[in-house]
Every structure is written in structure tokens, then in C-alpha cells.
Length: 317
Image (cartoon, rainbow, N blue to C red):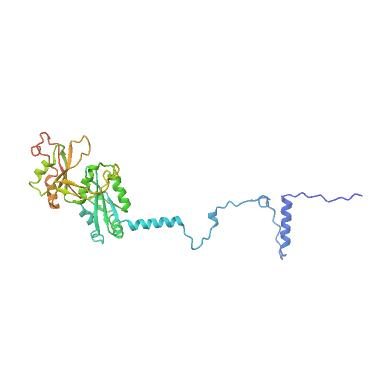
């Protein structure tokens, strides 16, 4: 008589989960109200390894109290370093007739009124104001106060814009403005730096007019500087892009009361002159007399002008 054996069960997901559930039940102590055996879930009972796709940001991390983000710390240090050395304020959208007194009066009543050490106007190729000026201070605290007080103010019907500048920002602005100019503009720009307020720009004069003839006519009525040797430091960036090796040093030129500027265009029929007055009062008197007047041909031995040359005079600061 043959004995019949029970059927052999092949391992599958269901049997594996069943044995696993029964083994877990046997390890725990019996409870008064035993819970029913949960039904197996194929997604959780798979023999293959599964990995969580939950992003790390949603899990949450506990960082130590001494943790420091190096990138943020470096940005903050650079920001603080920039604020500490920002001693310049760039004032934009200025009227063309704004004077240094107007810029100082914007801080009237503030602690920064007496701390303005220098005011630099940014000029165009024709040496006319470009509605921008750099105001220098000896302390960054006063420059911050001036910038917050001036920004948005109204001067001459225009709303001003002010921004803080570091020494490197100032140099980059001057290089971007004057570096491509011819080197002949170095001397006029340095003259403005040394004799600001006493220089008068006479524009739209015929090209054939000479320095000697114009000085001869002006010296009779106005107090001009005599002819002498002028030595000054080269500080302007005119021609810096063309010849960087020649930048620096000092000027050594013989100047009189009138200096003829280079032509701003090869085909220009007019030119401009710088008149060096002894005092600022003489400069203002010359401007009031010559501004918006027509060039007189008989005075300067120019035969034909036809009233086409209307002069413009302004004080350079």
C-alpha cells in the first residue's frame, strides 16, 4: 500500500508574506484583543529592493548651531567691505546750469554739509556738462547720509538720482568716459581740476581765430592770467586707452590767458577756447557779457561770418 504525501507548495509572494506575518505574530506576546492579520500588499512584499523618492528638503535636517554658509558669509563680508569704502556719490540727471553750491545746498542742515571735499563734473567731448557729478566725502557715513537725502530730490525741475560709488567704481566710470578721447584733452581736463570756477569756456568761435588775437582783445577789459609755465599733475584719463604707458607724470607747458581746444570733429568750422581768469568774479562777469552774443567779424579780422556764429559762454567747475 503506497503512502500519499501532501502536495509541495512552491514559494511565491503570497506564501512568503503569509509565513512572514505568522512569524511576526509568534514573536509578540498575545494580547487580549488580537488584531486581524493584515492582507498582504504586493507593492510592499516584493522581494526586490525599493528606494524612497521623497526629496531631501521635505524630510528636514537638523544643522548644528555652529553651521555657517560660506557663500552667504562671503557675500555679506563683500557687502560690508563695499559700504565701508564707498566715499563717493554719483548724482545723475543734474541740470546743465547746476553749480557746486547747488550740490552742497542739497545737504544744507545735515552733518554732511561741511564734509564735501570735492565735486567732479563729468563732461562731454565739447566740455559741456553731461548732467552727472561725483561728490567726494572723507567719511563713508556722510556719503551714505548724503545719498539717502539727495536721491529723489528736485533740482531745477529735474528729479535727481544718487548712488554710492567706491574708489574702483569711480576709476571705472572716468576710464569709460575719457579713455577713448585724444590725448590733447589731458591738459584741458587737468586745468579744470586745478582752476575750477575760474575757467570760462567760449564755444562756437570760428576756427581761424588764434589765441593771441583773442587774448589781445579780452585782456583790455578782463583780468586774465599772465603767460607763465604751468606744471600740474596728470590726473585725467584722456587717451588712457590709446597709450597706457604715458599715463601719469606731470605737465610742463607754457600757457597764457587763452587756451585753444582741439577740434572735436575734423570737418568742424568752429572751435572753443578756455579763458583763464584771475578770480571767479571775473569769470562770471565774462560769462554775463559774452553769453548768447554774435561773433563780431570786424573785431577779430574774420571777413565773412554772416551772423552764423552765436557764442555760448559758461564757467567750468
